[in-house]
Image (cartoon, rainbow, N blue to C red; front, side, top):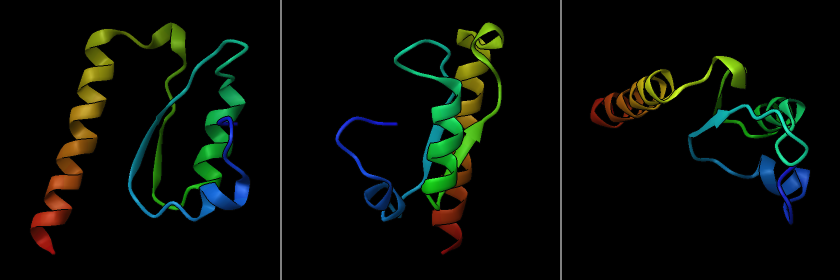
Length: 75
C-alpha cells in the first residue's frame, strides 16, 4: 500500500488513476490490486513487469489519457 495513505483516504480519491503493477519488495503486485479495489476511478493495467516495456507501457498510458480526454469532451 502507499505509504502515509489509509484505505479510507484512498477510497476518497475521486479522480482517474492509471495503476501499473510492480513486482519487488517496495511495489508488490498485490498492492496494485488493492489500489484498484480502493480507488473508485482507478484502472489497473494487468500486465506483469516481465512483460512491460517502454513501448507497451507508453501505448497504455496514451490510451488511458485518450479515454480521459474523450470523457471530458463528451461532458
